[in-house]
Length: 339
Length: 274
Image (cartoon, rainbow over all chains, first blue to last red; front, side):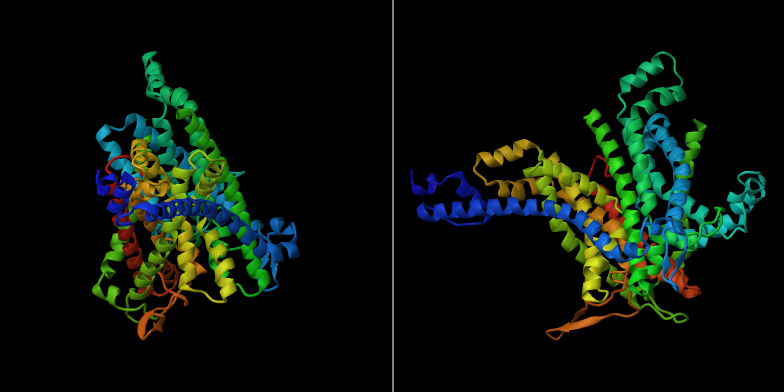
Protein backbone atom coordinates (compact mmCIF):
# COMPACT_ATOMS: atom_id res chain seq x y z
CA UNK A 1 0.00 0.00 0.00
CA UNK A 2 1.25 3.44 -0.68
CA UNK A 3 1.97 5.58 2.36
CA UNK A 4 -0.87 7.95 1.66
CA UNK A 5 -3.40 5.16 2.01
CA UNK A 6 -1.76 3.67 5.08
CA UNK A 7 -2.66 6.64 7.18
CA UNK A 8 -5.00 5.73 9.96
CA UNK A 9 -8.45 7.19 10.31
CA UNK A 10 -7.20 9.50 13.01
CA UNK A 11 -5.23 11.42 10.45
CA UNK A 12 -8.15 11.49 8.07
CA UNK A 13 -10.40 12.82 10.75
CA UNK A 14 -7.79 15.36 11.68
CA UNK A 15 -7.51 16.51 8.13
CA UNK A 16 -11.26 16.82 7.88
CA UNK A 17 -11.21 18.99 10.95
CA UNK A 18 -8.45 21.04 9.40
CA UNK A 19 -6.18 20.58 12.38
CA UNK A 20 -3.07 19.15 10.74
CA UNK A 21 -2.03 18.37 7.20
CA UNK A 22 0.02 15.25 6.49
CA UNK A 23 1.33 13.40 9.47
CA UNK A 24 3.88 10.63 9.33
CA UNK A 25 6.51 9.16 11.64
CA UNK A 26 7.71 11.47 14.35
CA UNK A 27 5.42 14.33 13.41
CA UNK A 28 2.53 11.93 13.81
CA UNK A 29 3.63 10.99 17.31
CA UNK A 30 3.99 14.64 18.16
CA UNK A 31 0.52 15.36 16.84
CA UNK A 32 -0.92 12.52 18.87
CA UNK A 33 0.82 13.91 21.95
CA UNK A 34 -0.65 17.27 21.29
CA UNK A 35 -4.06 15.70 20.90
CA UNK A 36 -3.70 13.87 24.18
CA UNK A 37 -2.74 17.13 25.82
CA UNK A 38 -5.66 18.95 24.24
CA UNK A 39 -7.96 16.20 25.37
CA UNK A 40 -6.72 16.48 28.92
CA UNK A 41 -6.96 20.25 28.84
CA UNK A 42 -10.55 20.15 27.61
CA UNK A 43 -11.50 17.61 30.21
CA UNK A 44 -10.06 19.72 32.99
CA UNK A 45 -11.57 22.86 31.55
CA UNK A 46 -15.06 21.41 31.75
CA UNK A 47 -14.35 20.13 35.22
CA UNK A 48 -13.13 23.54 36.27
CA UNK A 49 -16.33 25.11 34.93
CA UNK A 50 -18.42 22.61 36.87
CA UNK A 51 -16.47 23.35 40.04
CA UNK A 52 -16.88 27.02 39.18
CA UNK A 53 -20.65 26.64 39.48
CA UNK A 54 -20.10 25.21 42.95
CA UNK A 55 -17.79 28.06 43.85
CA UNK A 56 -20.36 30.53 42.59
CA UNK A 57 -22.87 29.47 45.18
CA UNK A 58 -20.34 29.33 47.98
CA UNK A 59 -19.05 32.73 46.82
CA UNK A 60 -22.54 34.17 47.08
CA UNK A 61 -22.99 32.83 50.59
CA UNK A 62 -19.52 33.83 51.71
CA UNK A 63 -19.70 37.37 50.37
CA UNK A 64 -23.11 37.86 51.98
CA UNK A 65 -21.81 36.63 55.33
CA UNK A 66 -18.75 38.86 55.17
CA UNK A 67 -20.84 41.83 54.07
CA UNK A 68 -23.33 41.40 56.86
CA UNK A 69 -20.80 40.84 59.65
CA UNK A 70 -20.76 44.47 60.89
CA UNK A 71 -24.54 44.51 61.25
CA UNK A 72 -24.69 41.10 62.87
CA UNK A 73 -21.92 42.05 65.29
CA UNK A 74 -23.66 45.26 66.28
CA UNK A 75 -27.16 43.92 66.65
CA UNK A 76 -26.56 40.26 67.29
CA UNK A 77 -29.57 38.00 67.39
CA UNK A 78 -31.73 41.03 68.08
CA UNK A 79 -31.49 41.88 64.38
CA UNK A 80 -33.91 39.08 63.63
CA UNK A 81 -36.54 40.05 66.18
CA UNK A 82 -36.42 43.85 66.13
CA UNK A 83 -39.03 45.71 64.17
CA UNK A 84 -37.35 49.09 64.32
CA UNK A 85 -35.63 50.26 61.13
CA UNK A 86 -34.25 53.72 61.56
CA UNK A 87 -31.46 54.90 59.25
CA UNK A 88 -31.11 58.19 61.13
CA UNK A 89 -30.28 56.68 64.51
CA UNK A 90 -28.71 53.64 62.80
CA UNK A 91 -30.95 51.16 64.59
CA UNK A 92 -31.87 48.29 62.33
CA UNK A 93 -34.01 45.21 62.76
CA UNK A 94 -35.23 42.78 60.15
CA UNK A 95 -38.50 41.70 61.68
CA UNK A 96 -40.80 43.94 59.64
CA UNK A 97 -39.16 42.89 56.37
CA UNK A 98 -39.20 39.21 57.29
CA UNK A 99 -42.84 39.51 58.32
CA UNK A 100 -43.74 41.23 55.06
CA UNK A 101 -41.91 38.62 53.00
CA UNK A 102 -43.65 35.75 54.74
CA UNK A 103 -47.12 37.33 54.69
CA UNK A 104 -47.05 38.32 51.02
CA UNK A 105 -45.73 34.90 50.04
CA UNK A 106 -48.40 33.25 52.17
CA UNK A 107 -51.16 35.25 50.47
CA UNK A 108 -49.65 34.33 47.10
CA UNK A 109 -49.56 30.62 47.88
CA UNK A 110 -53.06 30.69 49.37
CA UNK A 111 -54.41 31.77 45.99
CA UNK A 112 -51.92 30.30 43.54
CA UNK A 113 -51.84 26.74 44.87
CA UNK A 114 -55.54 25.87 44.48
CA UNK A 115 -55.88 27.79 41.21
CA UNK A 116 -52.66 26.34 39.81
CA UNK A 117 -53.67 22.81 40.73
CA UNK A 118 -57.08 23.28 39.14
CA UNK A 119 -55.55 24.56 35.91
CA UNK A 120 -53.25 21.55 35.91
CA UNK A 121 -56.25 19.24 36.39
CA UNK A 122 -58.04 21.00 33.59
CA UNK A 123 -55.05 20.61 31.27
CA UNK A 124 -54.48 16.93 32.01
CA UNK A 125 -57.99 15.60 32.54
CA UNK A 126 -60.64 17.77 30.96
CA UNK A 127 -59.19 19.94 28.26
CA UNK A 128 -59.83 18.89 24.65
CA UNK A 129 -56.55 17.76 23.09
CA UNK A 130 -56.34 20.54 20.53
CA UNK A 131 -56.59 23.17 23.26
CA UNK A 132 -53.88 21.74 25.48
CA UNK A 133 -50.91 23.07 23.60
CA UNK A 134 -52.16 26.66 23.18
CA UNK A 135 -53.16 26.90 26.83
CA UNK A 136 -49.86 25.37 27.89
CA UNK A 137 -47.97 27.92 25.81
CA UNK A 138 -50.06 30.76 27.22
CA UNK A 139 -49.28 29.64 30.75
CA UNK A 140 -45.59 29.53 29.91
CA UNK A 141 -45.82 33.02 28.42
CA UNK A 142 -47.28 34.18 31.72
CA UNK A 143 -44.21 32.69 33.39
CA UNK A 144 -41.94 34.49 30.94
CA UNK A 145 -43.24 38.02 31.61
CA UNK A 146 -40.42 39.92 33.34
CA UNK A 147 -41.20 41.01 36.87
CA UNK A 148 -40.66 44.68 36.05
CA UNK A 149 -43.71 44.43 33.79
CA UNK A 150 -45.80 42.93 36.56
CA UNK A 151 -44.55 45.83 38.64
CA UNK A 152 -45.53 48.65 36.31
CA UNK A 153 -48.85 46.96 35.60
CA UNK A 154 -49.48 46.47 39.29
CA UNK A 155 -48.69 50.07 40.11
CA UNK A 156 -50.72 51.77 37.40
CA UNK A 157 -53.56 49.33 36.71
CA UNK A 158 -53.98 46.71 39.39
CA UNK A 159 -53.48 48.77 42.55
CA UNK A 160 -55.93 51.56 41.58
CA UNK A 161 -58.40 48.89 40.53
CA UNK A 162 -58.12 47.16 43.91
CA UNK A 163 -58.38 50.48 45.69
CA UNK A 164 -61.74 51.15 44.09
CA UNK A 165 -63.25 47.68 44.12
CA UNK A 166 -61.85 44.81 46.14
CA UNK A 167 -60.46 46.72 49.08
CA UNK A 168 -63.59 48.74 49.99
CA UNK A 169 -65.54 45.52 49.55
CA UNK A 170 -63.23 43.67 51.96
CA UNK A 171 -63.38 46.50 54.47
CA UNK A 172 -67.16 46.54 54.36
CA UNK A 173 -67.61 42.77 54.59
CA UNK A 174 -64.71 40.87 56.18
CA UNK A 175 -63.62 44.03 57.96
CA UNK A 176 -66.83 43.93 59.96
CA UNK A 177 -66.51 40.29 61.02
CA UNK A 178 -65.30 40.03 64.62
CA UNK A 179 -62.01 38.19 64.96
CA UNK A 180 -60.58 38.86 61.51
CA UNK A 181 -61.64 42.51 61.38
CA UNK A 182 -58.14 43.91 62.14
CA UNK A 183 -56.80 42.13 59.06
CA UNK A 184 -58.97 44.25 56.81
CA UNK A 185 -59.02 47.53 58.71
CA UNK A 186 -57.91 50.92 57.56
CA UNK A 187 -58.32 52.98 54.42
CA UNK A 188 -57.91 51.35 51.01
CA UNK A 189 -54.52 52.61 49.86
CA UNK A 190 -54.39 50.46 46.76
CA UNK A 191 -50.79 49.56 47.39
CA UNK A 192 -49.96 47.33 50.34
CA UNK A 193 -49.36 43.78 51.48
CA UNK A 194 -52.53 42.37 49.94
CA UNK A 195 -51.83 43.86 46.52
CA UNK A 196 -48.26 42.57 46.61
CA UNK A 197 -49.53 39.13 47.62
CA UNK A 198 -52.06 39.08 44.78
CA UNK A 199 -49.45 40.04 42.18
CA UNK A 200 -47.11 37.38 43.53
CA UNK A 201 -49.97 34.90 43.19
CA UNK A 202 -50.28 35.71 39.48
CA UNK A 203 -46.51 35.39 39.09
CA UNK A 204 -46.08 31.99 40.75
CA UNK A 205 -49.27 30.56 39.26
CA UNK A 206 -47.59 29.40 36.01
CA UNK A 207 -44.75 27.69 37.91
CA UNK A 208 -47.12 25.69 40.06
CA UNK A 209 -49.31 24.90 37.07
CA UNK A 210 -46.57 23.65 34.78
CA UNK A 211 -44.87 21.47 37.40
CA UNK A 212 -48.16 20.01 38.64
CA UNK A 213 -49.16 19.31 35.05
CA UNK A 214 -45.92 17.44 34.42
CA UNK A 215 -46.38 15.46 37.62
CA UNK A 216 -50.02 14.65 36.85
CA UNK A 217 -49.09 13.50 33.38
CA UNK A 218 -46.66 11.07 34.96
CA UNK A 219 -49.46 9.25 36.80
CA UNK A 220 -49.75 5.85 35.10
CA UNK A 221 -52.91 5.85 32.95
CA UNK A 222 -53.72 2.33 34.09
CA UNK A 223 -54.37 3.61 37.62
CA UNK A 224 -56.82 6.22 36.35
CA UNK A 225 -58.44 3.75 33.97
CA UNK A 226 -58.92 1.28 36.78
CA UNK A 227 -60.56 3.95 38.91
CA UNK A 228 -62.85 5.02 36.08
CA UNK A 229 -63.54 1.33 35.48
CA UNK A 230 -64.97 0.83 38.95
CA UNK A 231 -67.23 3.82 38.38
CA UNK A 232 -65.39 6.75 39.91
CA UNK A 233 -66.32 10.25 38.80
CA UNK A 234 -63.63 12.54 37.40
CA UNK A 235 -63.48 14.35 40.71
CA UNK A 236 -63.00 11.09 42.61
CA UNK A 237 -60.26 9.97 40.25
CA UNK A 238 -58.47 13.25 40.76
CA UNK A 239 -59.00 13.30 44.49
CA UNK A 240 -58.23 9.68 45.36
CA UNK A 241 -55.89 8.53 42.56
CA UNK A 242 -54.05 11.37 40.86
CA UNK A 243 -53.46 13.63 43.84
CA UNK A 244 -52.13 10.97 46.25
CA UNK A 245 -49.85 9.58 43.56
CA UNK A 246 -48.53 12.99 42.60
CA UNK A 247 -48.39 14.42 46.11
CA UNK A 248 -44.64 14.64 46.56
CA UNK A 249 -44.13 16.22 43.16
CA UNK A 250 -46.90 18.73 43.71
CA UNK A 251 -45.42 19.75 47.04
CA UNK A 252 -42.06 20.13 45.31
CA UNK A 253 -43.65 22.38 42.70
CA UNK A 254 -45.39 24.43 45.36
CA UNK A 255 -42.11 24.91 47.23
CA UNK A 256 -40.45 25.98 44.00
CA UNK A 257 -43.19 28.57 43.54
CA UNK A 258 -42.73 29.63 47.14
CA UNK A 259 -39.02 30.13 46.51
CA UNK A 260 -39.95 32.43 43.65
CA UNK A 261 -42.44 34.37 45.72
CA UNK A 262 -40.02 34.86 48.61
CA UNK A 263 -37.27 36.27 46.44
CA UNK A 264 -39.36 38.26 44.00
CA UNK A 265 -38.21 41.85 43.97
CA UNK A 266 -39.38 44.29 41.37
CA UNK A 267 -43.08 43.53 41.20
CA UNK A 268 -43.31 43.73 44.97
CA UNK A 269 -41.20 46.87 45.25
CA UNK A 270 -43.65 48.74 43.04
CA UNK A 271 -46.76 47.97 45.06
CA UNK A 272 -45.75 47.27 48.66
CA UNK A 273 -45.33 50.85 49.82
CA UNK A 274 -41.99 50.34 51.56
CA UNK A 275 -43.03 51.00 55.16
CA UNK A 276 -40.84 49.36 57.78
CA UNK A 277 -43.55 48.45 60.22
CA UNK A 278 -45.74 45.52 61.04
CA UNK A 279 -49.40 46.35 60.64
CA UNK A 280 -52.18 43.99 61.52
CA UNK A 281 -54.07 45.07 58.43
CA UNK A 282 -53.25 43.40 55.14
CA UNK A 283 -54.33 46.55 53.36
CA UNK A 284 -51.61 48.63 54.96
CA UNK A 285 -48.30 49.29 53.26
CA UNK A 286 -45.41 47.15 54.44
CA UNK A 287 -42.12 45.99 53.07
CA UNK A 288 -40.35 42.78 52.16
CA UNK A 289 -36.70 41.89 52.37
CA UNK A 290 -36.14 42.19 48.65
CA UNK A 291 -38.13 45.42 48.35
CA UNK A 292 -36.13 47.02 51.17
CA UNK A 293 -32.87 46.14 49.48
CA UNK A 294 -34.03 47.35 46.08
CA UNK A 295 -35.38 50.60 47.45
CA UNK A 296 -32.68 51.55 49.88
CA UNK A 297 -29.39 49.96 48.90
CA UNK A 298 -28.13 52.64 46.54
CA UNK A 299 -29.18 55.36 48.95
CA UNK A 300 -27.76 53.69 52.05
CA UNK A 301 -25.28 55.95 53.75
CA UNK A 302 -22.80 54.49 56.19
CA UNK A 303 -21.37 51.04 56.59
CA UNK A 304 -23.87 49.89 59.15
CA UNK A 305 -26.85 50.72 56.92
CA UNK A 306 -25.33 48.92 53.92
CA UNK A 307 -24.30 46.02 56.07
CA UNK A 308 -27.80 45.72 57.54
CA UNK A 309 -29.26 45.54 54.04
CA UNK A 310 -26.77 42.84 53.09
CA UNK A 311 -27.71 40.99 56.25
CA UNK A 312 -31.33 41.16 55.05
CA UNK A 313 -30.14 39.64 51.78
CA UNK A 314 -28.39 36.88 53.70
CA UNK A 315 -31.57 36.07 55.61
CA UNK A 316 -33.55 35.99 52.37
CA UNK A 317 -30.97 33.76 50.74
CA UNK A 318 -30.94 31.32 53.63
CA UNK A 319 -34.75 31.11 53.68
CA UNK A 320 -35.01 30.53 49.92
CA UNK A 321 -32.08 28.12 50.02
CA UNK A 322 -33.89 25.92 52.50
CA UNK A 323 -37.17 26.11 50.59
CA UNK A 324 -35.54 25.41 47.22
CA UNK A 325 -33.41 22.58 48.55
CA UNK A 326 -36.53 20.93 49.97
CA UNK A 327 -38.35 21.46 46.67
CA UNK A 328 -35.54 19.94 44.63
CA UNK A 329 -35.27 17.03 47.00
CA UNK A 330 -38.97 16.27 46.65
CA UNK A 331 -38.94 16.62 42.87
CA UNK A 332 -35.88 14.38 42.74
CA UNK A 333 -37.75 11.75 44.69
CA UNK A 334 -40.65 11.73 42.26
CA UNK A 335 -38.28 11.72 39.29
CA UNK A 336 -36.64 8.59 40.65
CA UNK A 337 -40.00 6.94 41.06
CA UNK A 338 -40.97 7.74 37.46
CA UNK A 339 -37.72 6.95 35.75
CA UNK B 1 -65.09 20.65 37.23
CA UNK B 2 -66.56 23.96 36.23
CA UNK B 3 -64.30 25.31 38.93
CA UNK B 4 -61.19 24.14 37.12
CA UNK B 5 -62.45 25.69 33.89
CA UNK B 6 -62.96 28.92 35.79
CA UNK B 7 -59.47 28.64 37.24
CA UNK B 8 -58.00 28.30 33.76
CA UNK B 9 -59.96 31.29 32.52
CA UNK B 10 -58.76 33.18 35.62
CA UNK B 11 -55.14 32.30 34.90
CA UNK B 12 -55.28 33.18 31.22
CA UNK B 13 -57.28 36.32 31.97
CA UNK B 14 -54.22 37.88 33.61
CA UNK B 15 -52.14 37.29 30.51
CA UNK B 16 -54.73 39.08 28.39
CA UNK B 17 -55.09 41.91 30.92
CA UNK B 18 -51.35 42.50 31.24
CA UNK B 19 -50.62 42.33 27.52
CA UNK B 20 -53.64 44.50 26.82
CA UNK B 21 -52.54 47.15 29.31
CA UNK B 22 -49.03 47.15 27.85
CA UNK B 23 -50.33 47.69 24.32
CA UNK B 24 -52.86 50.29 25.47
CA UNK B 25 -50.37 52.41 27.39
CA UNK B 26 -47.18 51.66 25.53
CA UNK B 27 -48.17 51.57 21.91
CA UNK B 28 -49.02 55.26 21.67
CA UNK B 29 -45.52 56.22 22.71
CA UNK B 30 -43.84 53.95 20.21
CA UNK B 31 -42.31 56.38 17.75
CA UNK B 32 -38.98 56.72 15.96
CA UNK B 33 -37.93 59.27 18.57
CA UNK B 34 -37.96 56.54 21.20
CA UNK B 35 -35.16 54.78 19.38
CA UNK B 36 -33.30 57.90 18.37
CA UNK B 37 -33.15 60.14 21.42
CA UNK B 38 -31.62 59.95 24.86
CA UNK B 39 -33.65 59.76 28.05
CA UNK B 40 -35.02 63.24 28.77
CA UNK B 41 -35.06 65.27 31.96
CA UNK B 42 -38.63 65.59 33.27
CA UNK B 43 -40.77 67.83 31.17
CA UNK B 44 -38.72 67.53 27.99
CA UNK B 45 -39.28 65.13 25.17
CA UNK B 46 -36.90 62.32 24.53
CA UNK B 47 -36.49 58.66 23.89
CA UNK B 48 -34.95 55.53 25.24
CA UNK B 49 -31.88 55.27 23.05
CA UNK B 50 -29.27 54.99 25.79
CA UNK B 51 -31.14 52.41 27.89
CA UNK B 52 -31.90 50.30 24.81
CA UNK B 53 -28.25 50.27 23.74
CA UNK B 54 -27.23 49.78 27.36
CA UNK B 55 -29.50 46.77 27.71
CA UNK B 56 -28.10 45.30 24.50
CA UNK B 57 -24.50 45.78 25.66
CA UNK B 58 -25.21 44.30 29.10
CA UNK B 59 -26.93 41.31 27.49
CA UNK B 60 -24.06 40.71 25.10
CA UNK B 61 -21.59 40.96 27.99
CA UNK B 62 -23.61 38.52 30.07
CA UNK B 63 -23.94 36.01 27.25
CA UNK B 64 -20.27 36.35 26.33
CA UNK B 65 -19.22 35.60 29.90
CA UNK B 66 -21.92 33.18 30.91
CA UNK B 67 -22.27 30.96 27.85
CA UNK B 68 -18.75 29.47 27.69
CA UNK B 69 -18.73 28.69 31.40
CA UNK B 70 -22.24 27.30 31.24
CA UNK B 71 -21.55 25.16 28.18
CA UNK B 72 -18.33 23.76 29.64
CA UNK B 73 -19.93 22.96 32.98
CA UNK B 74 -22.91 21.40 31.21
CA UNK B 75 -20.49 19.34 29.12
CA UNK B 76 -18.82 18.03 32.22
CA UNK B 77 -22.16 17.04 33.71
CA UNK B 78 -23.33 15.26 30.57
CA UNK B 79 -20.11 13.81 29.15
CA UNK B 80 -17.23 13.36 31.54
CA UNK B 81 -18.91 13.09 34.88
CA UNK B 82 -22.41 11.94 34.14
CA UNK B 83 -22.50 9.61 37.12
CA UNK B 84 -19.97 11.40 39.34
CA UNK B 85 -20.67 12.37 42.90
CA UNK B 86 -19.37 15.82 42.05
CA UNK B 87 -21.84 16.08 39.20
CA UNK B 88 -24.85 15.31 41.31
CA UNK B 89 -23.77 18.01 43.76
CA UNK B 90 -23.18 20.49 40.94
CA UNK B 91 -26.58 19.62 39.45
CA UNK B 92 -28.27 20.30 42.78
CA UNK B 93 -26.39 23.56 43.31
CA UNK B 94 -27.16 24.60 39.75
CA UNK B 95 -30.86 24.00 40.27
CA UNK B 96 -30.71 26.19 43.34
CA UNK B 97 -28.83 28.94 41.50
CA UNK B 98 -31.45 28.68 38.77
CA UNK B 99 -34.12 29.95 41.09
CA UNK B 100 -32.06 31.96 43.56
CA UNK B 101 -33.46 35.45 44.15
CA UNK B 102 -31.85 37.76 41.61
CA UNK B 103 -31.52 40.61 44.07
CA UNK B 104 -29.13 38.47 46.12
CA UNK B 105 -27.01 38.00 42.99
CA UNK B 106 -26.90 41.78 42.71
CA UNK B 107 -25.69 42.05 46.31
CA UNK B 108 -23.05 39.41 45.62
CA UNK B 109 -21.65 41.24 42.62
CA UNK B 110 -21.80 44.52 44.54
CA UNK B 111 -19.67 42.91 47.26
CA UNK B 112 -17.11 41.33 44.95
CA UNK B 113 -16.91 43.89 42.15
CA UNK B 114 -18.51 47.25 42.82
CA UNK B 115 -17.22 47.72 46.37
CA UNK B 116 -13.57 46.84 45.59
CA UNK B 117 -13.59 48.88 42.38
CA UNK B 118 -15.16 51.77 44.21
CA UNK B 119 -17.77 52.64 41.60
CA UNK B 120 -20.70 51.21 39.70
CA UNK B 121 -19.94 49.91 36.24
CA UNK B 122 -21.55 48.33 33.23
CA UNK B 123 -19.06 45.53 33.54
CA UNK B 124 -20.35 44.61 36.99
CA UNK B 125 -23.89 44.61 35.59
CA UNK B 126 -22.83 42.26 32.82
CA UNK B 127 -21.21 39.88 35.28
CA UNK B 128 -24.30 39.95 37.50
CA UNK B 129 -26.45 38.99 34.54
CA UNK B 130 -23.90 36.33 33.57
CA UNK B 131 -24.41 34.70 36.97
CA UNK B 132 -28.07 34.37 35.99
CA UNK B 133 -27.22 33.08 32.51
CA UNK B 134 -24.87 30.34 33.70
CA UNK B 135 -27.34 28.01 35.44
CA UNK B 136 -29.83 28.24 32.56
CA UNK B 137 -27.15 27.33 30.01
CA UNK B 138 -25.71 24.57 32.20
CA UNK B 139 -29.12 23.01 32.51
CA UNK B 140 -30.06 23.09 28.83
CA UNK B 141 -26.59 22.04 27.65
CA UNK B 142 -26.66 19.03 29.92
CA UNK B 143 -30.20 18.09 28.93
CA UNK B 144 -29.45 18.41 25.22
CA UNK B 145 -26.14 16.52 25.36
CA UNK B 146 -27.83 13.72 27.28
CA UNK B 147 -30.25 13.38 24.39
CA UNK B 148 -27.44 12.78 21.88
CA UNK B 149 -27.46 9.05 21.11
CA UNK B 150 -24.49 7.12 22.47
CA UNK B 151 -24.02 5.44 19.10
CA UNK B 152 -22.64 8.74 17.78
CA UNK B 153 -20.03 8.86 20.55
CA UNK B 154 -19.11 5.22 20.03
CA UNK B 155 -18.74 5.76 16.30
CA UNK B 156 -16.47 8.74 16.91
CA UNK B 157 -14.32 6.80 19.35
CA UNK B 158 -14.10 3.82 17.02
CA UNK B 159 -12.47 5.87 14.28
CA UNK B 160 -9.95 7.09 16.82
CA UNK B 161 -11.20 10.56 17.61
CA UNK B 162 -10.07 11.87 20.96
CA UNK B 163 -12.86 12.41 23.46
CA UNK B 164 -12.63 16.18 23.38
CA UNK B 165 -13.05 16.18 19.61
CA UNK B 166 -15.93 13.78 19.63
CA UNK B 167 -17.64 16.17 22.02
CA UNK B 168 -16.87 19.42 20.25
CA UNK B 169 -17.21 18.15 16.70
CA UNK B 170 -19.99 15.59 17.03
CA UNK B 171 -22.04 16.01 20.18
CA UNK B 172 -22.15 19.82 20.10
CA UNK B 173 -23.22 19.67 16.49
CA UNK B 174 -25.99 17.22 17.22
CA UNK B 175 -27.22 19.21 20.18
CA UNK B 176 -26.74 22.63 18.64
CA UNK B 177 -30.39 23.62 18.25
CA UNK B 178 -31.15 22.79 21.85
CA UNK B 179 -28.11 24.59 23.16
CA UNK B 180 -28.96 27.72 21.18
CA UNK B 181 -32.45 27.50 22.64
CA UNK B 182 -30.92 27.49 26.09
CA UNK B 183 -28.98 30.65 25.37
CA UNK B 184 -32.08 32.32 23.93
CA UNK B 185 -34.09 31.39 27.01
CA UNK B 186 -31.34 32.82 29.16
CA UNK B 187 -31.39 36.05 27.16
CA UNK B 188 -35.17 36.21 27.54
CA UNK B 189 -34.72 35.76 31.26
CA UNK B 190 -32.11 38.49 31.70
CA UNK B 191 -33.65 41.02 29.33
CA UNK B 192 -36.20 41.93 31.98
CA UNK B 193 -33.99 41.52 35.02
CA UNK B 194 -33.86 44.65 37.08
CA UNK B 195 -32.90 43.71 40.59
CA UNK B 196 -29.30 42.63 39.91
CA UNK B 197 -28.65 45.79 37.87
CA UNK B 198 -29.86 48.27 40.47
CA UNK B 199 -26.60 48.33 42.33
CA UNK B 200 -24.16 47.04 39.75
CA UNK B 201 -24.58 48.98 36.51
CA UNK B 202 -26.88 51.50 38.25
CA UNK B 203 -28.28 54.03 35.79
CA UNK B 204 -26.98 56.77 33.61
CA UNK B 205 -28.89 59.73 32.32
CA UNK B 206 -26.45 60.05 29.47
CA UNK B 207 -24.06 58.00 27.51
CA UNK B 208 -20.60 57.39 28.86
CA UNK B 209 -18.00 56.69 26.28
CA UNK B 210 -14.30 56.16 26.37
CA UNK B 211 -11.83 56.69 23.61
CA UNK B 212 -9.53 53.84 22.73
CA UNK B 213 -7.08 54.35 19.87
CA UNK B 214 -9.09 57.33 18.73
CA UNK B 215 -12.31 55.34 18.41
CA UNK B 216 -15.24 56.20 20.58
CA UNK B 217 -16.50 53.11 22.37
CA UNK B 218 -19.02 52.67 25.15
CA UNK B 219 -17.35 52.95 28.53
CA UNK B 220 -17.89 49.68 30.35
CA UNK B 221 -16.20 51.04 33.41
CA UNK B 222 -18.90 53.65 33.99
CA UNK B 223 -22.51 53.27 35.08
CA UNK B 224 -24.78 52.39 32.20
CA UNK B 225 -28.50 52.84 31.70
CA UNK B 226 -30.59 49.78 30.99
CA UNK B 227 -34.23 49.49 30.02
CA UNK B 228 -35.50 47.75 33.17
CA UNK B 229 -33.78 50.16 35.54
CA UNK B 230 -35.01 53.17 33.56
CA UNK B 231 -38.54 51.76 33.65
CA UNK B 232 -38.22 51.34 37.40
CA UNK B 233 -37.04 54.92 37.85
CA UNK B 234 -39.48 56.50 35.41
CA UNK B 235 -42.54 54.56 36.52
CA UNK B 236 -42.09 55.57 40.15
CA UNK B 237 -41.57 59.21 39.20
CA UNK B 238 -44.42 61.71 39.44
CA UNK B 239 -43.91 62.98 35.87
CA UNK B 240 -46.47 61.98 33.26
CA UNK B 241 -44.07 61.96 30.31
CA UNK B 242 -41.59 59.79 32.21
CA UNK B 243 -44.37 57.39 33.10
CA UNK B 244 -45.47 57.05 29.51
CA UNK B 245 -41.87 56.42 28.44
CA UNK B 246 -41.77 53.70 31.11
CA UNK B 247 -44.80 52.04 29.54
CA UNK B 248 -43.20 52.21 26.12
CA UNK B 249 -40.02 50.68 27.51
CA UNK B 250 -42.04 47.91 29.14
CA UNK B 251 -43.74 47.20 25.81
CA UNK B 252 -40.34 47.00 24.07
CA UNK B 253 -39.04 44.53 26.66
CA UNK B 254 -42.19 42.45 26.43
CA UNK B 255 -41.97 42.30 22.63
CA UNK B 256 -38.32 41.30 22.85
CA UNK B 257 -39.09 38.57 25.36
CA UNK B 258 -41.98 37.30 23.26
CA UNK B 259 -39.85 37.23 20.12
CA UNK B 260 -37.06 35.40 21.94
CA UNK B 261 -39.31 32.76 23.46
CA UNK B 262 -41.11 32.17 20.16
CA UNK B 263 -37.77 31.75 18.38
CA UNK B 264 -36.54 29.45 21.10
CA UNK B 265 -39.70 27.39 20.86
CA UNK B 266 -39.54 27.11 17.09
CA UNK B 267 -35.96 25.82 17.25
CA UNK B 268 -37.07 22.82 19.26
CA UNK B 269 -39.80 21.21 17.19
CA UNK B 270 -41.29 19.00 19.85
CA UNK B 271 -41.00 18.64 23.57
CA UNK B 272 -41.44 21.24 26.24
CA UNK B 273 -38.99 23.73 27.60
CA UNK B 274 -39.19 24.30 31.27
